[in-house]
Amino acid sequence: MRRLWLIFAQTVTVALAIFFVVMTLKPEWLGKGPATATVVTVEEAEPANLPSSPGKLASFRDAARNALPSVVHIFTSQKMKARRHPMLDDPILRHFFGDGVEGDAPATSGLGSGVIVSTKGYVLTNFHVVEAADQIEIALSDGRNLSARLVGSDPESDLAVLQITQPNGKELNLPAITLGKMEHVAVGDIALAIGNPFGVGQTVTMGIISALGRSHLGINTFENFIQTDAAINPGNSGGALVDSQGNLIGINSAIYSRSGGSLGIGFAIPISIAKNVMEQIIQNGSVTRGWIGVEAQEITSDLAESFGLPDASGALIAGVQRGSPADTAGIKPGDILLAVNNREVKDPQTMLDLIAGQKPGDTVDFKLRRQNNILNTAVKIGKRAPQARPRE
Image 1: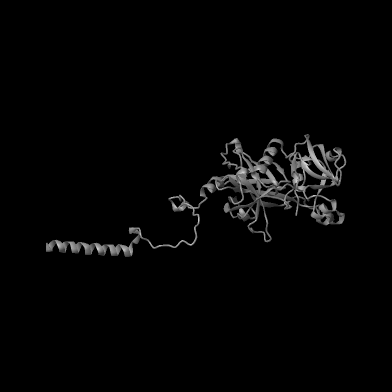
Image 2: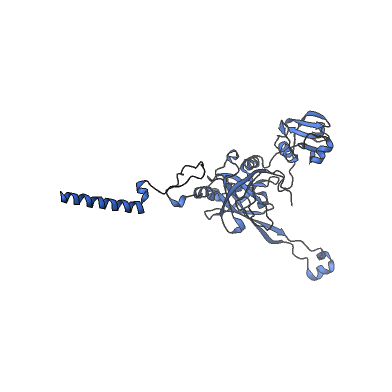
């Protein structure tokens, strides 16, 4: 009996010792972790299903891998014609110095980016990248250097379409990018800017979509920019702005900068506009826009008060070109354009965009305010003549 009692006592002592050690070092094994006081009740997200591989955590490598091969470097050159000095026309000077030589001066070069949008070799870029270029060379991501020709351009939207020429008729096997859809793009979405900033080589920068529909910037005639804080620098022009899947959503076009470098405000032309311009250029060689021949002015609060208007919406017609579609339809200076084809006109820029979007030859309803009367008139849309790109 005494022996059994000693065994029992030793067993209890060992068990208590083990319990004490576990309670001290590993209390969670017993389900008795330290108590935490609840300060306030909050909704907490469920634990995310993170990738098992730490290397893929918060990475956009797949998007970059999909888009990088389609973004190219564009090298342009322009030969400068040497000017004959007027003094060489003097007979005495010509006797001593001869007729002089008139030829080509050293070529100037430019650098930008572009995006392959078709396996047929079509490349989207900015008009200012290839403006006045005599020769255009494309450098692909795989190291190939190929020549390209200008298919057509649209200075008013600052877009141009190039086509890579196929040497000896060989198939180039070009990697065309996948086009995104603007209806899937929203403020706050991740965006990657791909291009060749400062000529250092292909670079990817990341940011978000800061705003959509940016206009009144004085960069282009027709403006509807995507604003992003992804770093865009000189040389990125014409490059790709892609979403988190690597789909093309914009063509990088301009930056807001006081120093020439990125300040986190960059602008890209939406793919919806770029695609429409590209298709018109490929099909027709140019972009066709509607025109009615009016000059519009913004309605300020002071003007609205002086005219007795209920608000400052609309576009004040400041001038009408004689013999233009607007003149034929009876539109007069002082009228306020309120709607085009049942779409509201908020300001002169909206008016310009709406009219430009109409097909020349079509008859469209215009809603006007003349003094205190609301008028409706039908205007036969004319064709807008090509305009030069605005300069700062």
